[in-house]
Length: 357
Image 1 (cartoon, rainbow, N blue to C red):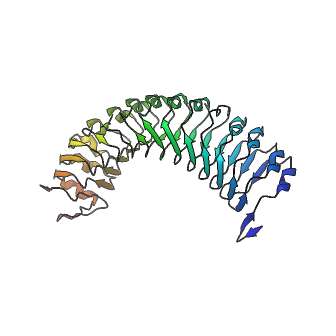
Image 2: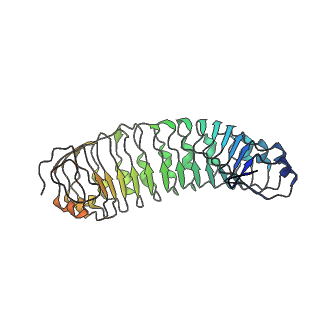
Image 3: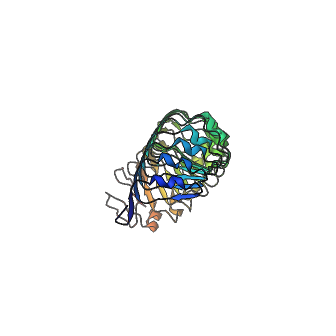
């Protein structure tokens, strides 16, 4: 059963006779085929760790009946078929990891009976339908990853009733209409990734109430609305990515005052008007600032030179009329222009440069 250091072939059905087995750990091999029906007898199993194999077929219904099963990990296999509803009745389940398989069908509306669950990762499958409102019953959940599926519809406002959720990943689905304002009630949320969906309408001002939030990505949606000034109230925000999202209006003056921000990516939108002239844009924590492919005009503020950690600054399709000489201290490179200074990534090419001082 071994080939080049990896165990191959199918799991032996005889393992089903080990009724006292607590841990079945076979990760990182080349096992294929389905999970044997004989494993229904492993009722004392606590850990089922099978990631990085070639298992196929559906998840067995009987797993939901194992009273002590705490960890199920089938990441990176070839599992197919719908999620068995019984899986969401496992009373001791702490982590359910099924990422990067080929699972289909909806998330069961009966997903309410997991009193100890802390992590659900089903990203990279082909799940369909909407997230059921009953998801809010999982009050102990910390991580929910449903990214890169075929989920569709309105995003349920019931997510706002999950006070312990810290990581919500819903990227690359087809959620549409407005982002629910109730998401602003998720007081423990650290990362909120809603990029590459079909959200429209106003970005909820209530997101500014997420005091623990460090990363917010809304890239690749179709808001056709302005940037809410309330986002600048998030004290610990490190990454803000709202690029390619049909953002209109002007660059908010409030966005110059993020105390901890390291990345601001607002490129490829419909922003108009001047750059903000306040000193706050020189945030010393800022590493990446991308405002390219908008319709901003005027002088770059002198304060940008105060960003001593700035490694990438892009405004490459903008009409800049003044570029502060102080930017040279960052060794920033200016492409496609006779004034070539030092530096990693400052790109300000393809604009009408009026003056360099």
